[in-house]
Amino acid sequence: MLLVEDVAKRFKSGGGAVDAVDGVSFEIATGTFAAIVGRSGSGKSTLLGLLGALDSPSAGKITMDDVDVTALSPRGQVAYRRDRIGFVFQQYHLIPDLTAVQNVMLPMEFAGRRTAERRARAVELLDRVGLTGGKQTRLPGRLSGGEQQRVSVARALANRPSLILADEPTGNLDSRNGKRIITLLREFAGGGTTVVVVTHDRGLASRADLTLAMNDGRIVHRKSKT
Image 1 (cartoon, rainbow, N blue to C red):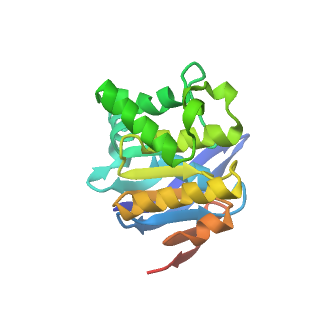
Image 2 (image 1 turned 90 degrees about the horizontal axis):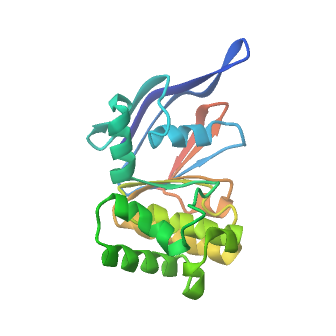
Image 3 (image 1 turned 120 degrees about the horizontal axis):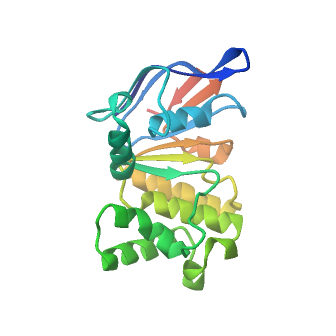
């Protein structure tokens, strides 16, 4: 279970401060597909970064299963991200000198898995996101934005994380490939992985088990299908 208790994130701005996340509380059961929606600037991506220990909250507590994420040391945060989290970023963050398949293999290398196992898993995941054949051995610069997005999704799934955090995972995809990614994320949620997506995609949000709407750093509406 992902438990968020009165979490806030304040940034200094000029002579004042901005509350990007302001007293947010919610819980997401294991295996839930959750969507965070809201206008640009409402705090969605900042909240996602806090859930993934990419940043620390100014106040409040985040617990993932048995881990108090807010109490982790810098080294503990690295281990938490490596062992438990799969990230899909808006900017992809692919290594430009590695091929698509090598980018997907990389987190498995950090986890100590064998080369043959890493390659087989990477090829399987790229096939599942619809990047097949020779495109798997292309460098990111020779892939379209949508293709790079699919590599990013495959990489996030590589280590079978317990929590997937995805920022606009279908934002650069056409309708067919967007549906493919949504189906894949739902499959992982059905297998017990908690999935949290930030999205403007109504089709994606409609497939979520839980929808959290944000405005001005706060949760202003919740909708659950259960």
